[in-house]
Image (cartoon, rainbow, N blue to C red; front, side):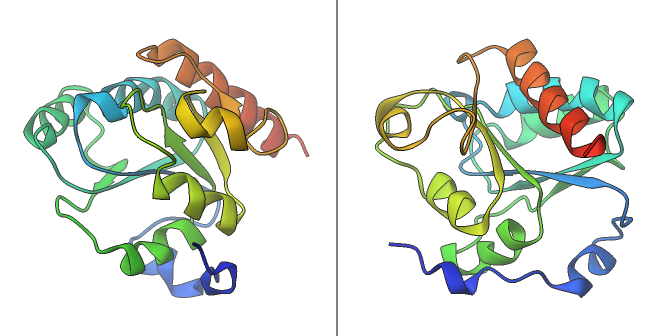
Length: 170
């Protein structure tokens, strides 16, 4: 399903997006709908970016785009969150997976095994997600993910805090 040899770090990626080298890149890829956990991602990011040098990239669009933009503005995160604000074809998302550090995908949408998870595993990303559907059958904590509770931004914050403190201290 996923060709792992396509995931290559691009030195120009950070430069093109004005991301400093000492920042960790958190990634959300998917439709911006409530059930994909996008609000929990923004809420957790609001707290995590106070503690760590992080940038959040949100790839996708959907019915919650305007609400997400308002939340980002309300939290004063406009300079810390990069929104594509549009659907990005699967092949074009490779550059985001290849150059990010952590996928944050706390979905509670009843789907099979999302491509965001396939691609993140193939790219070697740390993954923060929920133990639902096929994810719980194919991913395992701590080997390749950190489980979070659905619809729980504090759980997402705790998982990110755990990953980032361990990354910084190793």
